Image (cartoon, rainbow over all chains, first blue to last red; front, side, top):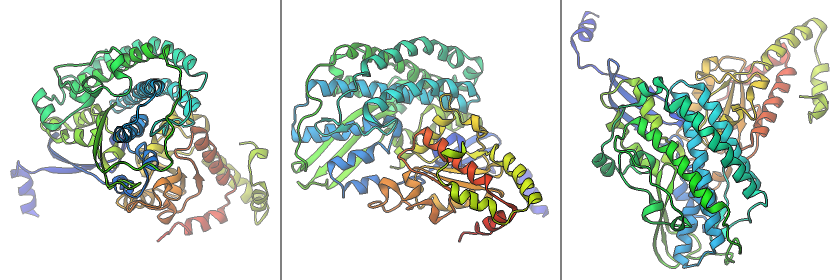
Length: 374
Length: 181
């Protein structure tokens, strides 16, 4: 007994290890973080994965290309449309199909609406993580409007499964343009409120400014993409550098900051909502007429070879790598998911900060856990 | 929920009529009234259904109308666990433990296709549990992938209806059936 007491008194190096998760409200899903603490300071964070590993990549090997699409939107469910799109683009690239203009514009519009609703949810949950319940209500109120637009056209609120190889599943709903314009008008009005509540909030500044800084070199070497990377100045927007769909015909700014702390990762997402609205503005009145899909064979067989396609999701660069051996099912599918790459930097970011900052940093990277585990 | 909207009124009447007396029935009514109007769910979301659960708590659909607004982060304070999202084999022991940590009376709502049968992952996946009822006893199943907020509300109202029919006797049988190995 005496020895034990002595140990605690003298051993200053002793670490205190706690588990955050797998079931914890701030992890936004089922993620287990094993945190080593010294006092209140975080020494080391070890994420444990696999609590929502569903084996999607392996499942893809026994499913046809049309069926794979319906699994991909369960990966990153907040960016369901982009997840569908990346597989469709890869298949179209492999088959060398020319896609009608209307499809390209529809996909771009839907992608940007998806980006807005995803960032709204980020805003809502990040505010709530840091103690602002109001954010939750404001963010989800406006997100509901986007979900209504999705529901009208695609039939799904969040898991849309709207893309198919060669185009989209159905044509746009006649109300689509009207609804989108209504939403933009409403959202332009309420976005300054978002700034009032959170961006200009002193308490929020205390919790985020200077917390978890990431330099440009580190961002590149860890492969941090999306708004988290762009907050560190890493110009990694796939929409700019390798335009797909209709991104080559719209003008928008790539939101870049140099600071790279939690606050600027947050700010990059809020600014991206503005840019997304600009993109929608440019396209909503010029949706070209034409077919909404190319007629495809019921059984798609990709020619033998390897294909890679990437798109920009709200959380970063999503890539799909398909190896085909000429059958109707792929030989191997691999997803380069943005969340998995972004998670790798967590340990580096939180070292030396307090445990309360861990929540702030973890939230600012905007993780979707099923996308990490797949 | 209104009487005529409930699908299974016959068995409801049967439950009410069999084996209740005036005194106990009144006590049951009072307890059940309190219990059904303050169902506190556990914040337990593994994937997509969790977002729809959040959306149900948000302004448009407003969970709070039915006394369920208080999401508890600790299973010891929660009455009902809404299993929202896929349960994989690594998560299954954790879910079982969460359920065991909850105090009686406790209820389970299986939300979404994944929790009912494994959903889109039931056939080809090697790691998904095909239905949470293999691990814990489920009271209400809500189909959909993910279910709409209205569907979740409907399911929770069905759960309230279930609680309304409980008696002291049936509760004992229920609790005994919770030792689920």
